[in-house]
Length: 79
Image (cartoon, rainbow, N blue to C red; front, side, top):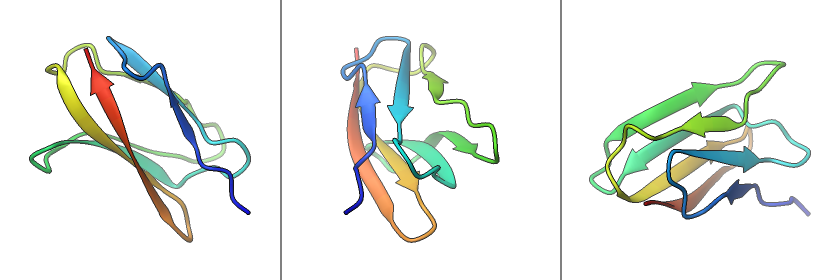
């Protein structure tokens, strides 16, 4: 049983955090609703889980969290 990562605060204004509990993801990417990637981060042994998004337009984004064996997609609202 795998625990889903959580994104907070959601909605957010200038930053958000991802809590992935036990398993470190390979990468996290943020996409706008037209499919354009607007942010990306890959991880090694020392991950940073805070993402600055203050320069992006307000709206709905998709956060894609990539693990070795699966991908999790969650919505993020940027106010």
